[in-house]
Length: 308
Length: 308
Image 1 (cartoon, chains in turn blue, yellow):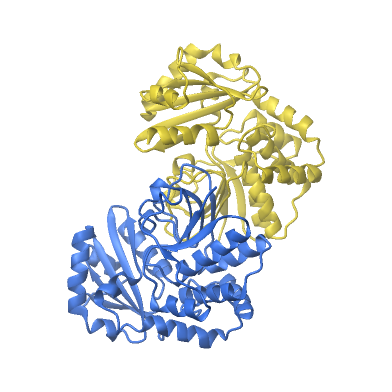
Image 2: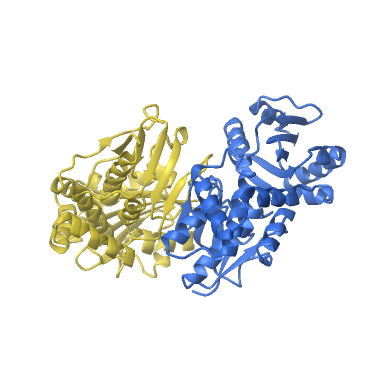
């Protein structure tokens, strides 16, 4: 059927990059001419994982067609998070762990979503179901993804199935999960060497909730003040993005990976309804969400219910 | 979590009814309080299968809430084919083999779609993955579904995976597939005792392609003239449905189960574009589509490409 791109979401995180590599490897073993590609710059955290386990970054693409006519999506399904010309190619498969929205196909497809914390956990099952062994360095990537998505197993998105997968991957990869995991997270949480322009797109996702257009950017930090010290300039930048993309709401989420809380900076005409949804009051556009670390499980559903 | 409804699509066919029963049984074995329900009258074919293997019809429901707050969808995902109050409940899982469209959730879920000919083929895998044996009478239902969806293995939707599942189910159920299958199909293809009002909703599905609103009803026949003899009255009825539902196109598909062809009766303002898409000319609103038996694989994709 010709080459197939395996694609993670825009502003890729560690799960998106490593899932593309890990699933492309599996599909190649099964006879498909699959290539992992990426839709954006890899984070410091992901670069650490790729380097540690001996991988190059996947190739950066802007469009899928005309090089390929078929794609596989991993770690996402929403069109606005995917390759720009998604409508011009056929989606053969999706492997994901998010809600389903803004996704439509003309043809039946293989779609495998499970409500687990990480795409890698599902990929581990797919390796087993297809009778393919996970190689040592791929196991390292899959472990990295689970650590990343769960903030070292602390996120409420982290399930028993993720724990089982992480333990299996750690054995195959031969690493100490806690030691390796903290080093990897710290490599991604060093925000001082990042420009605000970089921070704002690092892990940003767009959502449409009813008629409300939202962007939620999230960064991990050892010290949230690394970001808050630059609040004035950050707000200028956020307001520019709001105007350009005609957003109704922009949440910038700074997650404290050591204390498992998040500080949110909220702008846009729906800012008050958003903060009310979390039962917090914005002071100087900022509030702390205690115990909140997961955009998917603790932020998007709350906003969905409140803004629909 | 309280009771969960397992729901097939409106105007249920054999796969929808039996998948609801078969998956509810599996979920009950796994500890969920699951109940198979249905959204419409069972066909003569489905009644034959239920009776043969000793099952009652699932309970008919109009709405899911407030009796349940969570549902599992089988054999469909498009909102307009599902329970009317789908937006008021949480979709926990989907097991399906159709394209994905008009489907959206707030939360991550278990979604298992595969491009195979029948939901039962996927359910057979889920029984295995969960280590639950398929009971003899459930195997009979699952075999019935594969026979129904593939017109006794003749449809282009029928895959190698469906063949394997059908063979496994036939062994467990202890029936002669060809003999049982033809008797079951004939029980559903006796159209003379059906009113036109019954025929028109028997296996009708709505689709939205871009801004074009379409209804496609399909019936199986031993003799297509059982329907065509009543064309004038059928057209009156179709025009009434077009007006009521504000359809742009209504295809009534009569599939000859012995010769594996279909006759289409086409009304609505998009009728010419629809017939052009199939490279046929409508004579008195009617045309024959040689070798076409599958709405999903041979009709919907053709219309999707042409009308988008």
